Image 1 (cartoon, helix red, strand yellow):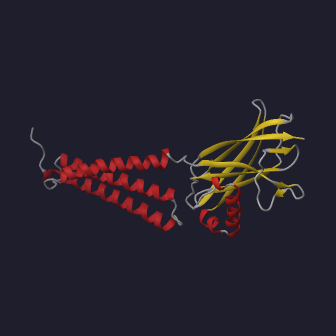
Image 2 (cartoon, one colour):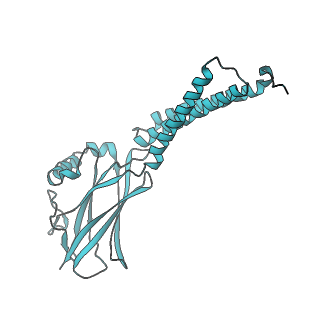
Length: 257
């Protein structure tokens, strides 16, 4: 049975070129959307654009290679091998980028959690911020802590969007509180008040602060369900709404009268 001639495959050739055109158009659209609408350009949007580009290159090479294999189009000598090499490379690149985008989207982690001093006269954070060496507080009083986070993601608008939940859990009963944290990453890094606080943090907890950390102060009147004095554990969970991932940490606490 003879194979169909190339002239008999005009419809397949046309369909192949249309698919290639649609793929290239999609890649261009994704990059234009990222450059124009995702301002400021954030890491997540850029990675999504790169993943789309790699997938598009992979599909383009695969379609061209299959059309040549089926003798629908004719590639010049040596181009088929080159196309195969580009196909393998683009598959590996797509896999690596997809892994970073999806599998490593939970790289947000807690750098430190520390109890901080509260001004008893005002019920607000002490000014300047001070870390309590002994993690203890009086029952019924306001207490506070600071959580510093690394590798916090931003959403498509360049904003941090976190949910902080803290709870006392004795294994049977739990008391919990929660609070949102949000703000534009670019504005926060240029905010004079935040920069002033960061300088304070660097003096009291230098091991917890660097150029990539996000600092969250929490003030609460949460009381443990267990009314006994002594050692308790405060569990803190931070949800990253931009990725749907979370980080967890614990703060040993001493309850005193």
